[in-house]
Length: 231
Ligand code: URA
Image (cartoon, rainbow, N blue to C red; front, side, top):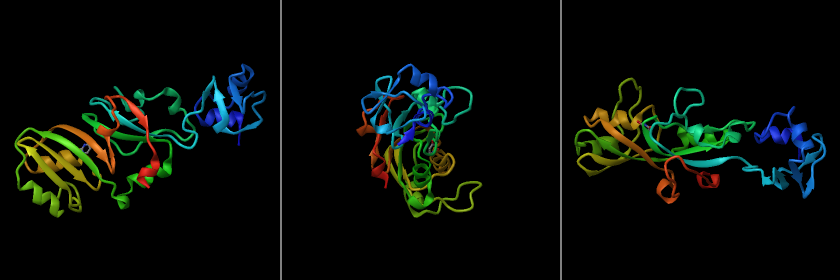
């Protein structure tokens, strides 16, 4: 049970101060009855606001098909991935963030959540959640890159430890897939540049067992996911 004003602010409808006006206009219904007071306690699962159930009462977990050209940031110039989500989500008490980032020029699967412990657990290097990327390169991918990436000895400029073993599949001259078990800055682009095959197109196809192609999302679309699949 939560106080009505705390609930409206927690789920991003309005500030606690504004809650009185929402309640007095009869916009909040709980357990079938119009809520009369902001001080009263209600069960969010049983509450409608403007006739609609409160979304993601137990935490927001969403998969987004990130289009090329959008930045994973709350405050940069240009198109932001957060512009693709309902504005109300961004006002949720705990904030809404991407789990890791994709470059502006990378498309593909991006997870979004307001659950800080889910975000940290999934980003933790200890978890080794795999990420699968599809890419196109400017020059042919050298076959030697397959064992080099697999053995975990590739040192990238400015790094203190070699890249962890990664699975590279060459599909044709300039197309391939790379599965990583860690996340370093611009890692896919840097690994392929290091073997003389700079990336010209990059797309994240999967995170762990979650595959973008199974979600049927057009670029810019999102869908709720079950966080239990990552536990
Ligand atoms: N590696 C990159 O180089 N870019 C991304 O966006 C993700 C992984």
